[in-house]
Image: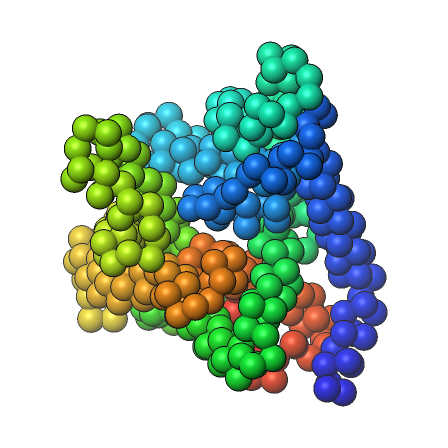
Length: 440
């Protein structure tokens, strides 16, 4: 405890780090205050009594810290920007123009960021229409419906752009990745209420069961940390080069291939497709008993059919997303160009095939473990845990929190070590995702 207090003192003794932490807290407070500002023209009493969020809407409400269900000006939050970023990321794989921008360095990245911002505006306008039709019932609107829809779309778009600006400011002036930080703070803001509701539902007679649930949550979090941190290191030897009177190279480095190189993206992709069976079945529900049965089955996230299909989709998307984000041919070409080689493997195509083989071997167990974490909320719900608290037992919520916290700790660690202070952990450096993603 004494060492921890000393470390905290060292953190705030570094002026730049202290300023960045205070800036981050200030921006997050602004974000949380904005999530409580309701759209003009909405009767909050009717809204609270008539609205129920579940499925993907319940998950979005968790990401946005309740702003979704409150019909806030931040009701869509940063999610349209995430959607636009995913689209642009996929385009960089399929469209030559975006591939060319990606290879142009800083200027290309600035153009891609600008295109992403513009696309975010259009995505937000499209999502705002669906959001207003679902989240705000007609009886809760106190003004003209047409005027409300037009003004609310402008406010929701402005709110998303402001959230995007806050995220960029946190990245520049604060600690950690700003966009991920906004999502994480929304998730964490729901945790105290969820844990209190779970405790009250168990009562004093179920205190032992509540303690067991907390212990189980601890081990689930540790499993998510292991999945996030797991790395397979491939040794790379660089040949010695004589330039003038100096010798360069001749050192051994490593290519760190993450077991879960795709992060939470497979869960997000799979989650978006899991609503198609229920949606399609709902079209023929009135004319077919089979369609109605399928709709009921896939509307229940605890059914074995839902979770089996969900797990299979996650495994497939993990391989797909890993294949488009890690280019083994480019890694092999860069190594050959810089005079590097993997011991025992010929440069060029054999190196690329070797990396592909290693990547396939570690991606399979990683994808299975990711699928298990994704369906853990269903098992938690079946075990009698309240739905809101069950969301924290796995899925995107848990992986986002673990990833963002590790990244933030890694940045703080780097500041401490740069100033010759001891790190946060006795066992050594905190290894964040940014470290694992770098290729030697």
